[in-house]
Length: 446
Image 1: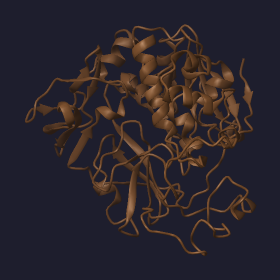
Image 2: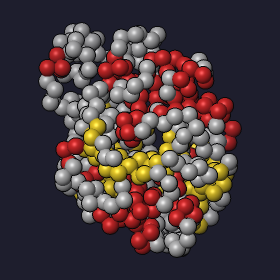
Image 3: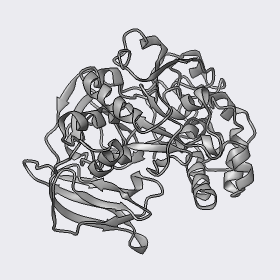
Image 4: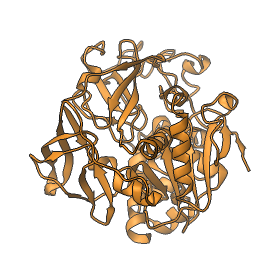
């Protein structure tokens, strides 16, 4: 039965740089990259070598331990470079794009799972627990899709998908064939009568209020049917549902996406058509108002600092540009003793709490270094799970598997702790701790 979900814990971060609902084209980038780091737990094995030609959909590498999962080229061109790090770990596979794209043929007439696997779109499907690319040998008890993003300056899915109802329906129809359970879709309560998702058939539709992290699929799963040990559920981004649907309608892969270019340092934030894995150079060139900035693939809470010459992450639909926080602020009017009208904070010690609708211009300064945990109750104010977040983090730090299991490690992903990290007075890197804990669970318990 459809469920109306209401969460009371969370925090909406009002930042400057919200995108206008207009879309522009960006000249195709000369270079594109596929980054194994976008896919936790992946051990890549290369299929192509430097100098080889590829088409859209040509396998670039596969998962050493799950060979059917292929990671394919989003463009046609030539493999320009395979960047490696310590112990020859593959960091990026960079492809120099052709002017005109050629495509691999995709036969969509077979088994749905096999079609998605062979097409290279399987990595769009992730699983809980572990928050990794889904194991195709498992049958999930349900599939979950979030119909909106509540992160700071997040793209508007209703705007991005308003003309893709047919592709969405085809995508949800395909997902329904991958599970014996339900395909759950959650949308904002305020859009339930006007949403592009309202007319989708064959799904279980839920509504939720929009305070972040309401848009996180983990929050929705926890409120609908929590994941227990031994159970698996799959998750798919709504935009990727439309991409899967497009594959089954047209028989062709399309890695084009519309991303939101956001942030206080962007001149006229708006939406731009771009291809997955593109170099961000063409996207940000001439659109940034200052030089000392951080370019983030994703949002300010969970995104990756890639720089102006970096590449768009596989799962990202947003690029954020904010000032670097590398200047000292020790004066009374600017430092930590300032009254706080210009400081974005969840603490009532700062006067910004009196201005809930004000949008703030934030930088990357953490105003301090990591220190011991302080049991302040701050995490619990923004963490809408029936889980003890500090205790779970401590169990993950000490690799205590029994405690991690009892405290709910199977339900969470790093993004679920992003707000905890933001409000943390101890500057604890909560997301990385959870990722490390999930890695231990995968190695020892799966």
